Image: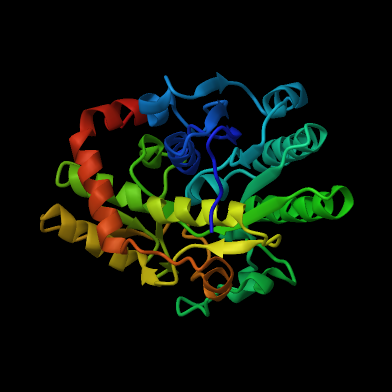
Length: 335
């Protein structure tokens, strides 16, 4: 299952972030002509420094419909990953801006893609669409795609993602657009913005804490018994490109079904560091839902895809990448 990307005109919205930068890099290698648009609210140009000479890079704000119209014109495929987003501390503290900014971007980009007769459109949704009542136990039952309804996401961020899924469904139904939607489950990997204080995610934060210990404390938010599954970026990109090439028009999970506690995640990072570290826990910090895991039944059946990189290997690669670029990571993220 695949597409011939050679010569394709591709737009990657949010292409200076984690997933967007890796998609752009992979498509360039496959011969596509890539345009990246990002306002750098969550991404940084350092994430795409190695491909800036090969891709067209526009620093622009997709909340502006005119920017979206211009960016989509002449494109064959659009990857829409731009959003106002961040880690659990960020998305639990901000609601209106997240919903307003991300909904505006998604409305603008879908309409721009429709007007430009874009052949295929990819939307990056999130496991945050799943209802809180299915995620109250750390021994959570893995979430199937149909479990998103009846809807009750635990954060405004998830409600906006769910709204846009339905918007994509409406555009498919009314205009015949070819749209693919992935629900990402905690994708991580070596990227500068993973370490951002407000918008970074748990794997990178734990890696930085291990690197900086004992000069800085190694604290875990909550009691550490909350559970998640984590997907390494290389596997994510393979899944996304298979999905875009497929005829599957409904939202689908792209994640791992290996459930770990945050304490276990920290233990793996500590083992990789080679240090003796006894973590502390900060019970005043947000920890999100108690448990969340991905059911991969559908993605295995439809795409023949499943993760190949183990959690340990993905964390090791990210740890080593960070150590090799530590001074620059600190500079970019003001650490």
